[in-house]
Length: 94
Image (cartoon, rainbow, N blue to C red; front, top):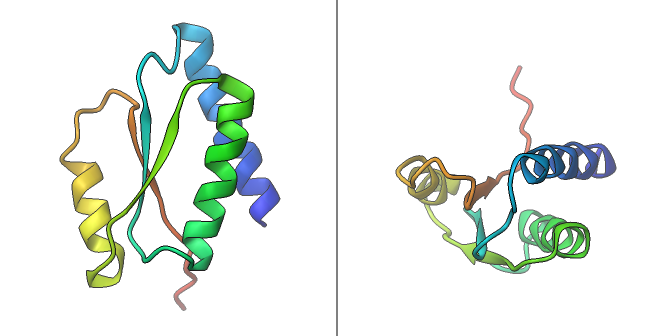
């Protein structure tokens, strides 16, 4: 599951890179949970792979609280320029 997620994220980033020089400045990967958790670890792996693939700087920004909503709100209010991305867990609700 994580491998599929990483592949999709990298493919999306590569599509953006084909359109322009990306990243021209540091990209912030926002995690709505504390450092050291599974979402944080996944974000660090994604950030490392994106750095290797695209170059540039991908910075992990942990914003824990409110079950991830603090980080999600920060990303929602950020400019839609592709330099602030949300890393969130997939949940299954039935």
